[in-house]
Image 1 (cartoon, chains in turn orange, brown):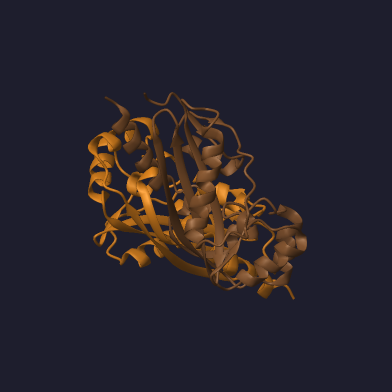
Image 2 (image 1 turned 120 degrees about the horizontal axis):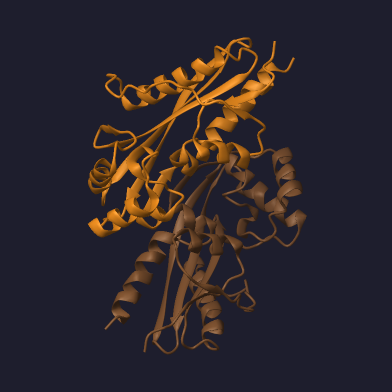
Length: 194
Length: 194
């Protein structure tokens, strides 16, 4: 049996926008999975674990659909940075990333119960910041409230002026590695067409 | 004497969008400079030459303003690719870029007659394409008509599914290296405040 529809198990407006950009039809059902940052996993395994948990929680009650779960983290000097808790956390996060290169890792999971699909991968992009002054950081936090974003910045908003280089997939930094996802998604579609 | 306003000397909707993204106030006056591709210059010098010609042509009749000119080209195997002439040209361009890495170079020029500013630089980004099937290329050309774009693709539209890696500034590929531009622009502003 084939899946009948695609569901994005994420409330991220950026992932929604990216899937629309590549012309896919889908519906959105955010998962209510609570992400436990104390889990002792490598950053790559961490993102895959939570992407899969998110996809699974929505797939279990939508057995005919293909469900897409994703989890994006920022890794600086080997330490995982999630979403900032508050203004203070946001400020010290951005301060610690100033003038450095960090990694953005997104785990992506595709699950369909009735089609017996259970596939997960991750993608990594390197992002290099300019040196940030305290004034610039404060201006950004005051005007853009980046509290819903891993690492406390949005590559597609005003903060882009401080990013002088990336290496890897740009869309991965926005929350979904479009090229890698599309290739896997098409491979699944083709393998399910008899 | 300081400049009183910023003018974008380009009709590109992408450059307009990028300047808005970083919160700048500006007006748009496209230059009518005709770009001669037969000019015997290195790719870097070529973009700087035409960026400066575009900025100059608008600056000469707007002497109190700071004028921003830009020129973006794609370089594949040492050869400059501009905007495609027609569907056929677009098809063969994309075919030649399939599975390879090319360079995107943007020349940026800032000119203000009365403030005696005449500053030009260029920025390079490497972009790696997946292997493209003829069907994918045809689908893209039929649905997205990428005839106004150097290299015949838009990194921010459906074509993004075929770009697995970039190295450098993402916004440079869209037509304006935001981070590099912003740093130079701010340096000019600060040097002009007495």
